[in-house]
Image 1 (cartoon, rainbow, N blue to C red):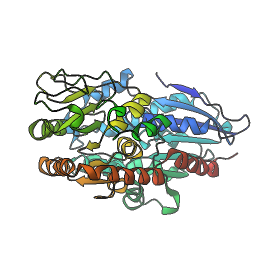
Image 2 (cartoon, rainbow, N blue to C red):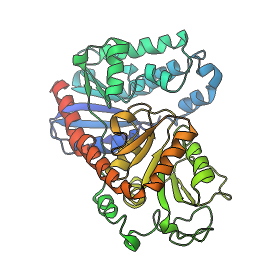
Image 3 (cartoon, one colour):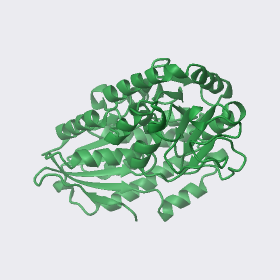
Image 4 (cartoon, rainbow, N blue to C red):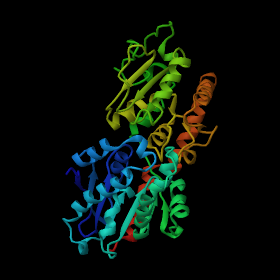
Length: 412
């Protein structure tokens, strides 16, 4: 079984702590910053386990999912995911004597069923970015009594844990209101990002002409076959086009298909679109003023790609607390995003970005058209976005806050 064990360089004699973290999508960013801050906190002697999906049993469960049944809970798919994760973490916990553990931290609750097997003397913290009740609602699942076993199991996990840490008020309120967990046991510590210094420096040159370079990083070739900085098929210099960006794995769920269609139908001659995703579409030959990339290292993405955008568009159909929005705002890029999950907590509509309804083309067209007409206002919105992100979503602020909470729960 792949567990991705990482021994962090915590202090000898610190609280003996195990960290189990689901390793996929934005959770990879969570691991990055959590490990970084644990390494310099002497209160913890941590071991971090990255929980991969892609082992044989997990892959089999994914393949057995039948969408029409899953939407109604008839195949109990989500319940089986909880059970699979329980066995995955239980296998890793066998290596340790519970009496020797001062803290067990698990992100997310889907992987936390194993805490029901631990003695109550072992302090446990469950970290979440959503609840499954919200997930069923957000993803437009059909209301069904067959989801009840999953929700009951999730409630037992929250009841057993000593503390529930939520990335957002949106998810925290669900734990309290939908699962009956005392508010004193639920804390909000927002997921945070601190960009590499080079990203900030590069953004400072974003509107300075040739020093900024191309629409995306040098060497990216758009689907029309022209390298950045040259002319597009209509005789306009590409540097004159609005630079629009999209970053997000799960291309369809994140609304990448909708953005691509809107761009091609309405804005292909007015904006250059850079899309970074692990599952970008394969058909590229007919696309105009589009650059498609996958598997870009995080540091490169944050320092060479993201800071060059004039506008970040994230029309996700359903989501939780997406790091991509925070990353864009931290880089000083205004964001158009949908009113789903915790995104309305991140973006102040009309101040540092714009909120639209999910799954609809017309609002997206309207806001992108506004951005093109009012391009001169985007830098000011971007400055507000950066101020918002650094004030509420900075990793250097939020991860020490998280570790303070964990230290207050740990036995040693």
